[in-house]
Length: 208
Image 1 (tube, helix red, strand yellow):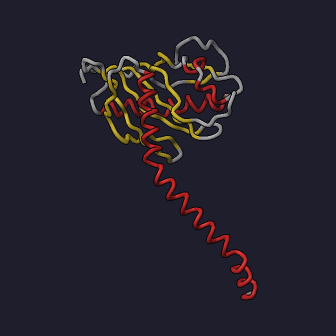
Image 2 (cartoon, one colour; image 1 turned 90 degrees about the vertical axis):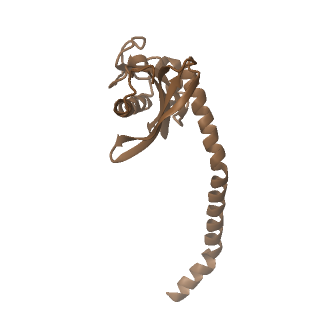
């Protein structure tokens, strides 16, 4: 037994040392690049919010680290931004939202009107969905169904008129899982974000 153990150590010590050094280099590299990664993500978030509410003069961080229950014991945190006009009025709210997709996590930026009554569509912040199928959640054909939809529970359907704006979202052909993932993200976040803003007295007052 001891002879076998000695042989194992002699044969594997270089692999163990190499693995340790490699892991250390990855950790150091990640730590060094993390500020740049976060800065790039923030820039992309700001650009997407500006695209969603183009009339906004600026976006102000209104609520930070708002907890969102994703189900099955998973809690995510998100920041809520207020879209502010040049005269100081509130044009709406934006927040990032996430959930599991077909291939990996999907991250969205969602916009709603200042009364939190209707959705102002969404943009994809990050996604690794299947090219040509799941990645079509970024296409206008699918996204436009959310533009003006009620800010409440949404339902997914496989068939129906995609140009009708209501609480029924028509799935992308061949990408039902990704389509369902987006709808589930909306259903997880909309009510909880609305509740958080209501508690702060920020819903429906353009002067706040």
